[in-house]
Length: 271
Image (cartoon, rainbow, N blue to C red):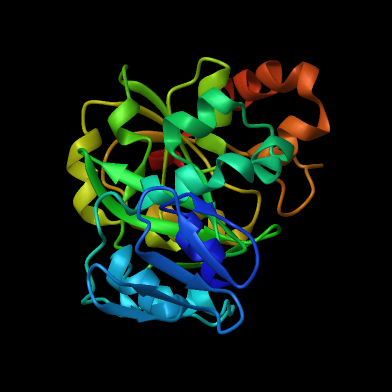
C-alpha cells in the first residue's frame, strides 16, 4: 500500500505528478516519490504507517500488517478496536467487491454485514449487541488473521429474528443461509473456538448444528450445554465438504439439501 492509497481510504486524493492533495483538506500534501505525507495545518507528517495509526486510528500492529502485508501477523490481546474501523474498510471496499461476488454475495448482503477490503485483504467484522468485537482478515483462499484488539464473538447474533437457528462453522455461510430464509449464526476462529459463556444465550432456542464434514467440526460438542441437534453428512460426502461447497455444487437443490440435513439431524445427547 502506498501513501496515496492510504490517504484515499479517508479522503479524496486529487492532482497529478509528485505532489498530490485532497479535496477535503488542501493543507494535506502527499509526496508520491518519497511515499510520505505532511499535514501543514497540524504540523505533522510521516509514512503510510504514520497515516494509518495517527489519522485513521488503526492500532500499531494492524497498521504494520497493512502497510507491509504478511501472513504471520499476530496482534496483541491488549489492543482495543476502534469502533468504526470496519466502516472504513467497508467504504474502501466498495470498489473491490469481486471476491464477495464470486462467493455469491449480493450488494445488499455486503452492505448489511459491512464486508470490506483493505491493503490486499478482505475484512469481515463481527458485531454483537451493537459492539464491534473483531475484524477477521481473509485472503482469496483462506482466513489469514485478525485486526489487533479482536476477541471472540458470535456472527449474525444481532440479526436473529426467531428461535429456530442453524449454527454453522464459517461466518461466510450465514448470509448465504439467510438469503434462503434460514436463521443462522457463526463465531470467530473456527470449530474449536466456541466460548462456553455463549451457552446461556441459547437455552430456549431450537438449534441445529451444521459442522464442516471433518473431524474438527464436531469439537464444538465438547463445549455446548444447551439442547441441540447435529447434522450427519451422508456417508458418500467428501471430507471437508461444507455449506459453501454444497451451494456451489448444486445451487438448484441447495434448499432441498439443507432441509434434508436439518430433517435428519440427531439430538447430540444420542451420540
